Image (cartoon, rainbow, N blue to C red; front, side, top):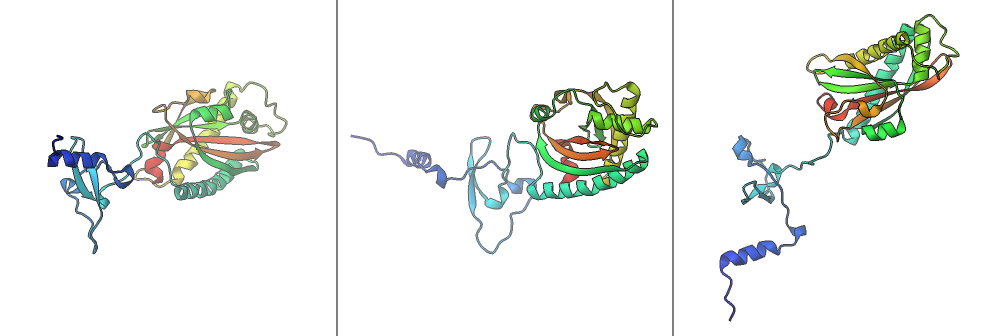
Amino acid sequence: MPRPMDHQHATLFKDLTVPLSGLRTAFAEDPTAEGESAAESGAPEQSIRIHRPNGNQTELPASAVHAFTVGKKAALSSTEVHRFRQLNEVLIRSLAARLSLFLRTEFGMEQSSLEIVDLQRYAKDFPAKRHLILFRIQPLDAIGAIDISKHLGLTMADRMLGGKGFAVNPDRVIREVESAMIDQVAQLTLREWSKYWKFEEPLRVTLLGHEEDPLHVPVSGDDETFYHISINADVGDCMDQIQMLLPVRGLDPLLR
């Protein structure tokens, strides 16, 4: 004759047979352990069963349980991305005026797109050889890259070296002196960009060197992603693009 279940076994069997849709689980720390007080409300707050790391189960108020996405990259919400795009549009217009004075000729700039990419995708869209200028933003300790198209870079360098900025051969190799001229434009661009943002201490940008392959841009991990700002630019008879890669995690303290 089967032996009746004792109360402990019956409770365990009941827990195992509760439908998943009817059971909400989460990991949380007790808010009272951190000196936090529970939210005050006129109506009883819903309780959620949580599993602690030691295996114990307990009930906590819903307000004490927060959702976290593990293994994903930090990124802005759609509203924050829209605001970031608008701020960049204002900054790029200001930068166009600054570069026009610097080059002593009309320099047009317009933001084309803003998206989040990883280096594999960027390298597929913009394969080597590129003229990537690496930079570090302090105190964020964020490493990014500015990618100036070869034709645009040579046209700007020609203008800076006393030329008219017209009919530049985009297929030839960038000489050392021209690379130094392009670095000056990148330095000016990044200086204006860093001055625009308000942070707890001033941002400082330092150039680190050059890369031809986007896959060689330094990253903090395999899952690193970047804000990719694509900018249409025109000077003289050249119409091309500037790409900016800004690390998502690195810029998070600045944009939040």
